[in-house]
Length: 117
Image (cartoon, rainbow, N blue to C red):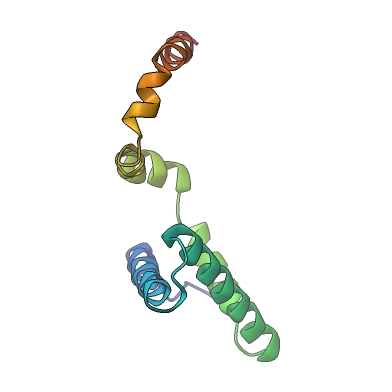
């Protein structure tokens, strides 16, 4: 390993937010894909471009820097203590209550069994 990474964890979060916002804008403006699909496709394209950059210019070590940065993040703590509440809130915004009401018995039984287990 070549030493400490260029970015801190705060810088990584900021960079990911800026990239996501930029990808969302490009998707909304030009591609008009569903938001989650557009961000996924552009993230895949950006990853492929980084791999091609590293293959075409051997002196650039993007993969090693990004891998070292990602290894610094404790994902279990980050998800459980930081992101879970936001993910659950975002998921609850998309609940179809009429469909949920039609399956109230099944959902109630499954929730009860899950709590008991």
